[in-house]
Image (cartoon, rainbow, N blue to C red; front, top):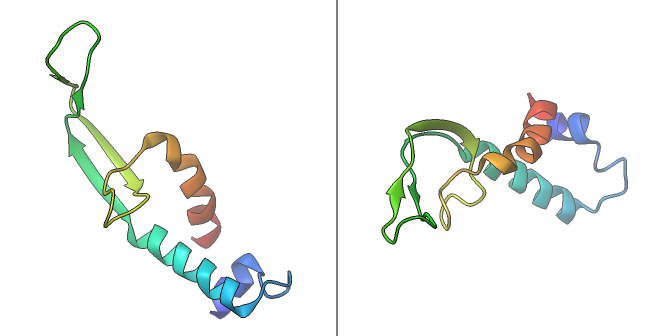
Length: 88
């Protein structure tokens, strides 16, 4: 808790203890959701009726929701990394 407060200073900014616990849980879930994904994606093309496979690729990402939607999104990474960079 001290490291969290030293890093984000939520108590000194006036956030209630419940809000601080919520923020700690959110950061914990973000960090716990970091994963490495490799493979092909299934894509729907306007040029074919059947889905096609993309080229192989890799993504090291913090997934938005491990239990409900365990897939990374490259466009989310900038937002994730703002918190990860401050934490570590």
